[in-house]
Amino acid sequence: MAKKKLTKSQQRQIKANHDKKLRSKVGSKLDKVQWQDDELGVTQNGTVISRFGQHADVEGEDGIVYRCNLRRSISSLVCGDKVLWRLGKETQHSIRGIIEAVHVRDSVLSRPDVYDGVKPIAANISQILIVSSLLPAFNSDIIDRYLVAAEQTGITPVIVLNKTDLFSELHQNERDEIEQQLEIYKDIGYHVLYGSSQTNEGIGEIKGQLSQHVSIFVGQSGVGKSTLVNALMPDLGVITKEVSQNSGLGQHTTTVARLYHFDDGGDLIDSPGIREFGLWHLTPEQVFNGFREFEQFQGLCKFRDCKHQTDPGCALTSASEQDVHPKRLASFNRIIASLGDNKLTSRFND
Picture (cartoon, rainbow, N blue to C red):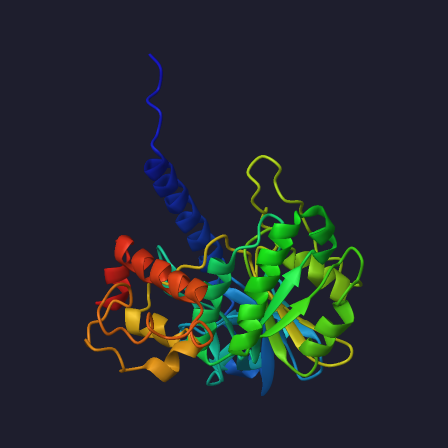
């Protein structure tokens, strides 16, 4: 008799249980690495270069990276965190020290996760580079989602159009549409950069933008974030993968967020790619505030519960195209509709 095929939900649950057991085994081993006070050196400052489950790589004041365990009192730790840590006098199971406390974050970028709620991605960032490209496809809706997320954090967003060497392969109307969309962002006040790792076009300008900042690249998988990192930091040799010819979607390359230093100043956090940046955790009011050009119309609609669609007396729909572009208003309404369609929304907004 043939075995009954497991549903996708059952397969996910089995994998989750397996991963939980694996983490438990690894975690129990690492938990044993608990030095006595006289086995540790003095407390010093450090920066989390990368986080791996129950331990993290910390860059010490000497510029050397040490793998450290975490005190159980630390509830959240992400790439970019500033920490207090102590070096063990002896290495135990490849662990060199222990993180004792996390400094207050200047900023934190988070995203909603189906299983973990709102999940921090990286900390102490000063600018977000939103990377889009001509392949797999230019998607302004995803750019708008990242812009909303960035506006919520107060972190400066910069838009980067990658793979500009492919412009010549597009039809003229496609090129015009992309340029018109980018002009909309420029008119709003967003900084837009262009780059190609194939021709090195714009790489110098992007590197200049990164100088003296702690930056993070975000965007769909396949837009070339890791390829850009290779072009900006060729000595690193970050692994890249081609866009899948079957699905047209990018293949994930970076599996763990990691912080890199530029020789000329500035840091870059390379984070795992995600194909959709959900905004389930935001309220409609927060999404409204994420469209910076809407600010001047705050509270001017005739009705307080205005949906900004066909409502009479809506300040947004009656605004001039110069003040509110129809494409941005349409994107806003699509995001609002996605909040209502997603059953997880109530989980974040209760």
